[in-house]
Length: 433
Image (cartoon, rainbow, N blue to C red; front, side):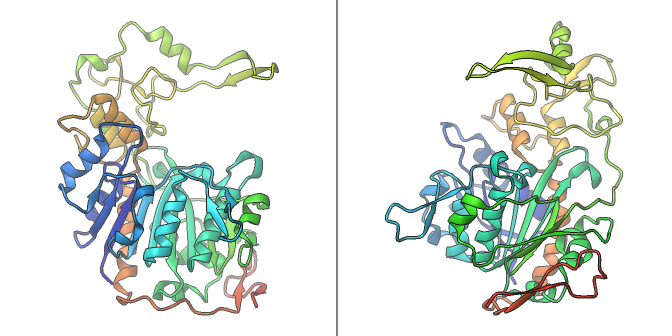
């Protein structure tokens, strides 16, 4: 199978860079990046600076694009926003359901329906598993149900980059979906959910966990109305899971931890004076310190807002905290380090921010991008080395695939994860007919 990629919400190209570092055989046939509400499209300009100006690099709102014009591709990738994924009956009452306007998941859903890529790899914040707070797990349940309806099985894993040898304690969920007609899906079909989570799945290969006989939580999404799921479904999703033919199992997995890179290893020397804090130390100490503040809600209710302390400055011997889009602003979450040479406190530089995310030095240095937006782009980006690790295993998967994916096999029963029983045995069978 050709290693062709469609990249959505491309940003400055983290997915593409990760795949191309693994192999130059990966061919991005179409990419879309659009920053709503901005006249200057700095991220897209950065993407084109590295990957070229091309008609296949599109700077338009994905919601306005006819999905049929997107070239055929075998892998769809993207870091899509965490939004409200709830659905509603269409106005006519006869056309099923429709996603809320502006919610970008439904653009992915439409591409799955129109282009039917063999494989999908998506990234999101880990709170996706718990959202919304009023109906925990609903949004992820909707996503899983959409994948099942479109003919895909799914694996997911929440990965802390520092636990697998990187320089940032960044926790994100990765979702790997594959059409049930692929050889890969057929190969996994005899395995229990637990076996796929422990050692047979993509994430188990790329990011090993401590295999354990952990009781899984299971649920069934097959043959459930999507609006009913939106209105009533909830589930306690754990950090690792598998869905086969609408039946999913999920466990709280423990990573086999690798040594992280400490922040001291990525610090620059001889940085410019404007990165130093100057006279504002007391304000930073207040922002980083523990505090309790009396506040009043909109309805007049009084409450105490409290937050714990953040290390100030950030310790040299630990990986960086999660970098946010507000990095470098006068903000509690901004990194402050003691410069190794001057012993004065300063912000991290744009190059250090790029190193924390695993990009090349000066990746975001363009003719037009302001320094502040360089930090913003890195706060939005993903950890590139994680993608390269996944790309290595995906490469092997796609090498074994024929060019044409067969139609989904009809499965009358599916094995539920056997939980604490031996993985070679079968659990309860679910009959869909």
